[in-house]
Length: 427
Image (cartoon, rainbow, N blue to C red; front, side):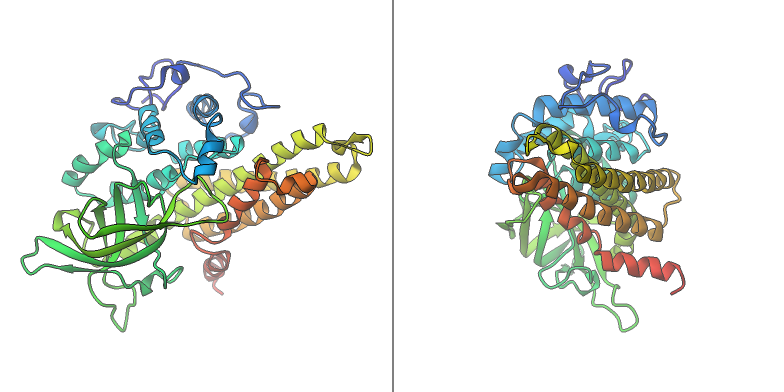
């Protein structure tokens, strides 16, 4: 099977997706960003194959042509335009891990998503809620959808005609998902469920066409608080479904995040995902990949912060000499580089383990904890080297600083990660 995009013998990223000619017909790219060279981020890394690197070059050219020129407009608007997701669908981004019979490329490697994450961070841009669409929602569809459901849902998922979000968190429940109050009551004739409740912090919730909603189909038992949670794929056009506020966040400004409410929404029984009452166990099975994705993103942000800072300190002069010439600058960036090198090793080991089906919950938690803490320290130090300009949103380091903060919260807080790791140690 040829790799997605950028291969001379490939017809784009998947069989039915038309690649963007100006991007996918290039076998290599010139340096689209200041101070860059193709494959600079992975010259000595063995975690990626030639297919992954060809995909990286395609993405880099696409980002330069389609995203960098307009990203400031997206940032000011507070969201990514809906039609951009159609472009990602045409490029084949959404179908890499989808089987060919549903319009995808049929690849079985999460590393393509890792490459995408690295390139987006490297350019200091965002693809909005599309990360949730692929990294969070697709695994549930692939693992628990019936054959009929896959035929109904996946072609539009791949093309970007239907964008997905996942709704777990509620106003009164964050890390404690077992405490959710949203209910889905089955009708007497068994043809549908009636959905009532509310969700918050839903990434991609404004543009979503379908949302995987976690809801209670039965009350918890004294022995198991997690019992009775089910998953539904809910069409956002159904009567009673409503998008509330688009939330005003500290960071991730181009990724729309919304409140959702459900008032007597009639969801077809045919849109139950997996078995009734088993939703909590399904959520737990995808958490290692979700946490790995966050670890990759944090590492990529820290690496990007160093690159942006190197460029800045070379150009900025203080007391008649470049900021880069001061010993403090050299020592600070050297220390940051050492930390990012360590984070890269952690990420690469976890990516290999995940593709081999061997990544444990504790290992994913450890990768997330380490990489997010490294990114926190590195980005803060890099902002300091920018001085006052580092506090200005026109500089990518300021946006990285704000975007990075949520990494230690979502996907499980750092405190939760420590608890998981400690439990694996028998503590």
